[in-house]
Length: 458
Image (tube, rainbow, N blue to C red; front, side, top):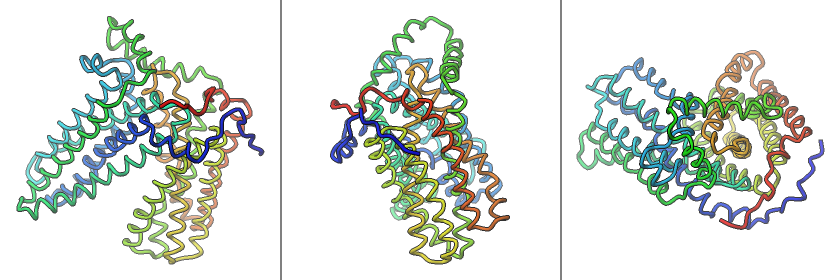
């Protein structure tokens, strides 16, 4: 199929592609990405290390996976963020920044509360409740940051903003995993008891939330949010529950009444399926070939992280240089082709250089596809009255492929063997490619394009 470039849009130069990352709006999103990545591990992997060191049994530790539930169902309270304003804070900062500051203040309080729990002696219910509060505050911050990012950035900045966000998110996560663990060891060297060392480390993590608070205070309220605020003012006297219900209904109705809505939603579910299908079994594949746990940690996690960060920025550059639909085509074929390199790896066997190349290609291309895809999802959220709700719903749908459709991947791999499995995983990209062609032919992407792709102002 021939892809016709958008000749009416100004083609970005290389300097344009780099300059977008230095725009104030994009830098604000970058620092908010750090704030979003920081809390996740504090209520999951880092907390589980603390619990295990304190002697908590594996059965109880396993149940703590349920703490992550707010991240999965956050779309259920996204209408609250869209419909209601935070008293006082909304007046001082605006509707989006008011919610941002509230969620960040809640994060500091909940992380500090978790810091003073003692997994070795305290009630498991207290620790679970504290961790759950961290997850709820973190998921709420995610909702608001997504809405803020979409409403702040122009269409040509969305992918660059997401690349910056993802890079900073990973750094935030690194700070609350490796960083927090190193702090525990450091405090022990200074003479702290193990329990107090963990408490001090968690308090240090709570202090890092100040980076997000400072970013919120420095940022300016998105213009789209300012426009929506007048709509809120007109309904200020309405019952809050009614306003939330109206916002939820409006968000779904606005989307479902669009042309080809069901096809668009199906495309959202399927676009990252091939990535998820192969990614679900990357770890057992590497171990089955004969690589060690250290090989897996160093190459898949270490080299893979670097490739993901570079790929994210490359995806932002591609989306800056080409129209949205062209970028999606590039992302779709790169994702599909990258799965086939695992088939090559299966024949190469235990070869560290081959595995390094395989992981670089897979993570690099996957990150390009992810950034471009998120830019597309962001473009679908066009009403500032419903941004938080619609984006939370779209990301929940996008997770269907990773969570449910790829659940049977292991059975297929057992039946076919690794080389054929990865060929099949590449073929799972075909339905989304067919839908991409269908939607392009019917003008879906043209309707999403903005009149000007590159803005001279900041």
